[in-house]
Length: 275
Image (cartoon, rainbow, N blue to C red; front, side, top):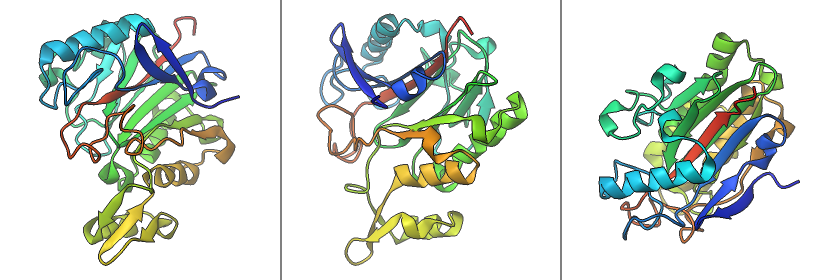
C-alpha cells in the first residue's frame, strides 16, 4: 500500500497520508499549490495569511479546502509557528484559533496535540518538515512544524513527550509520517547551521554532506526521523513522503525555489467523529 496517495477534488490536488488513515480513524492530509484563487506569486491554493497575499484570497482558499475535505473551518487550530519547539494541547475551546486573523493564532507554538474529535490540527509549510503523529491506542494526535531550528530543538521528540504526559501515549505504539519537505538534494546550509546541528543532534554525521567550501547539504526529513526513533518510535511505524518540495515547486510551494516569496500549503490532521 502507498504511504501517501494523491487525490484531486473540485480542482484541488492534495495528498492523503494513507499510512495513517488505513491504521487509525483519522484524516491526514497535505495540500499542494494546485487549485484555489490566489494570484502569482502565491498561485493558487495559498493557505498562509502571513506571506503577503490578499487576505480575502487566502480565506477563500481556506473555505474551499474546508469544504473539499469536510473539515469545517471552525474546527481548525493554528499555531503561530515561530521556528521553536513549544507544544500546546488543544481542544474545541481553541477551535478557530488563527483561522481568520494572524493575531488569534496560538502564540509561540509550533506543535499541537489533541485527543478531541472535531478538532483539526493545521500547520503551514513551504519547505519545512511536517511531522504527523497518531496514537491509535489512546486515540490522540500530534502535528509539528519543523524548520532547521525546530529540528535541532527536536520539536518532534517534544511532541512525543507531551503526548505521553497528556494522554498516556507510549512511543512504541505511535504511528508517524514525515511529509513533503526540502530534501538533501536541494537544501544547502552554511557553517552557522551546521554548528547548531552538531551541537544538538548526536547523529549529525548522518545528516550532513560537504558541498563546497563553507557549505553542506542537510537532510532535514531524516533528521526528524532519527529524532523520532531516538524518542522511542519504531522505525517501521514511520512513513516518509519522499517528496522534495524544491524539486517539485510546480506542485508545492517552495520558499527556496521561489526566492522567498511564495504561498504555503497545509498539513492537516483530525480524529474521526466516530472515535
